[in-house]
Structure formats: C-alpha cells, structure tokens
Length: 125
Image (tube, rainbow, N blue to C red; front, top):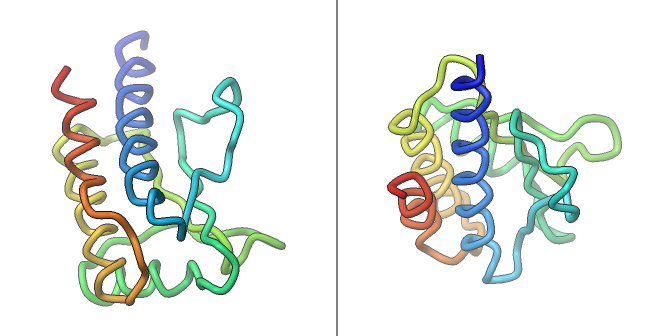
C-alpha cells in the first residue's frame, strides 16, 4: 500500500509540473494554490476567464479518445481535471498528458509547450 501511495504522489507531482509549464503563457493555472492541500488523486486546472475548459475536454474526447474530468457545480466550464490514481503508471499518465497538450492545440487554447517534457523530467528522477 505504501508503494501505491508513493506512485500516486509521483504521478500527481508530474501532472502538476506539466500544468505549471502549460500555464506560463497565462491561460491556466493549478486550481489549488496551497501546496499543503494538493491532491494525489486528481489535479484541477483552472482556465482564465474567457477560456472554456469544456473545449479542452471535448477536444480530448473527440480527437484522442481521452476522457478528462469536468468542473462540478460553479466550476463547470472553468476547470478540467486530470486523474492520477488507481490502475495507472508513468507511461499511461504521459500518454494522457500528451493528449491534453494536443487538445490545447486542437481547441485553439493558448499554452506553453513543454508540459509533457516537464512531467517526464519529474518521473525520470
């Protein structure tokens, strides 16, 4: 069980590294701003006002067959979520992150390239 929790933490840390790079352009950021409250289960990505998070989710599903979580209640259309726990390993996560990065391009969402590279760097340590 300790190894499972450690894997979830590694995958979460890599996901957050990807989001930080993507967000350097200013169109998105980690929803949780307090590192002490980060989840090792799921990462929520907050899009800046005027950018519909549903466009990312729809592009991922339609073009790459990847299902991303949406924002619930008052966060609908403002955030999308990337899960990183359960039956998941490093290559599977990297595939999902690559699909997200491709979805930004497909949906016309501005982002800084290199998020997947940042995740790989975290995982390769």
